[in-house]
Image 1 (cartoon, helix red, strand yellow):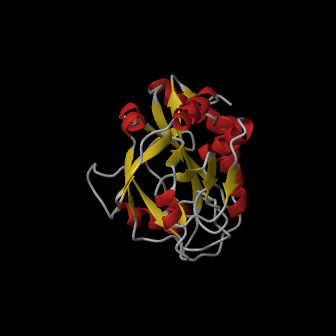
Image 2 (cartoon, rainbow, N blue to C red):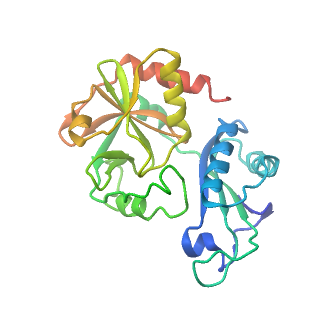
Image 3 (spheres, one colour):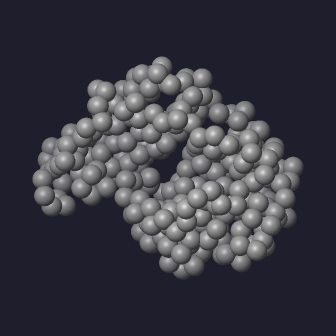
Length: 271
């Protein structure tokens, strides 16, 4: 089901700036039994991203009403929320006034999480690199061409995800996920101040690590550091946390901390 400004339709104006320029933001989340996990966090991220672009975010009850309609039809699903700046003419200058457009859509929930957690994920390196743009770093904006190009580098089911580097050769994360390394009992995750998306699950892992006294540092991660890690984790809001079983010639086995983090993330899904 797709709702555009609350109406059931899949049509949007050809003049919409989200279509023309990627001028907007989005968030993707998991609904189970009609409840969106971490809804308040997702909405806060959406508002923050809108603010970074100077777009007025829809009020929380408005999107909550859209979601209620979606999950009534499909209680277990993936929910995607989009806010565009709205219609505009030709050219980059932002017309005044603008009326933001909101889109809410539901999709079937992915399968295979149990197998993914049990067996881990085969991951590869991507050739496509992320550009450096501090003004947009962290924002889940609608221009995801770098991710699209990276995801075109493989097909089929051999790999679950691909890891992307920035222009300096440091690892930022996956095409659809944030990255964590386990090193000597502590966690390391790359900074999201020059490229990448700051995901809700990334924030939650950082909070849980502090709560259970697991050291967690935010610092540059090289490919060599990934290959030398004791464990590699990936996170997003659809699959939660999963572990990497293979990357190039490296192989890993799941450790006890993996199950503990997954349990704590699930336990706090309603925060």
